[in-house]
Image (tube, rainbow, N blue to C red; front, side, top):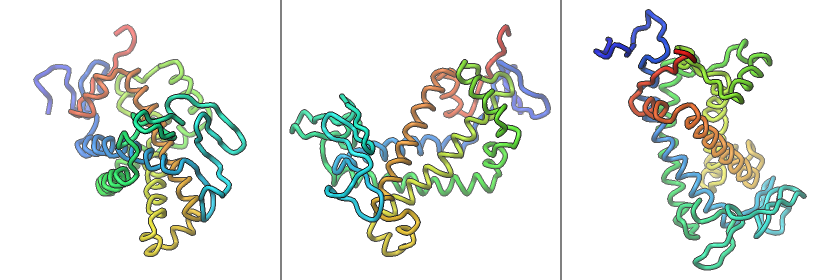
Length: 278
């Protein structure tokens, strides 16, 4: 079907050109994107409040104040191993209401005041909002070959020459134009696959490992991650990896044209960028 608008293209017979309005994202992708965005933001913010209750991370079966930590956030500094990094503002701040020192500032957490019980309620609720639609999206993605067709890198794309060229293009803000803009580049494929098949599953499984009830039902989780303290560390690393992905993703959306990018994720329609000089 072709819209009455002359530059709207939905035909597969001819390669779309720069300036044309095309269908980019299917409805399941768009629905999962926004539901996932909501749940991940709430999980990250409530998770930071949970971390504030004990801002130290350990490896092994156990982790408490007397044990040797590999990461800790204290008033005025961040400690990673033996490295001490001075901090100001965002981390190792002080809550204005009660003067309590916290790892992450109140504007980054849910709730915005220190409340471990409420933050755990938010975290557990939206963990289900993340997991259940995520399983549905995974099922749809494999059944419809979305992952194999759109996200699986080819051997040519994984070649060092191709990777370096794509990195150089991104550094120079040279984004694809015309029909090439409809395909994920190798950096996008690696980033999305890393989040979908490594960071999100890692965060979910380590979150289950920290539950005594799940440990009783599935004791192999403790063996898989090397103990509850190690699971907490891996959980934190996965969460920070997801946060970094979101930050880079938002920056790239702004640089590539926020109106066009956001419209494509709301309506599914995307206007292909024109070549220079068109």
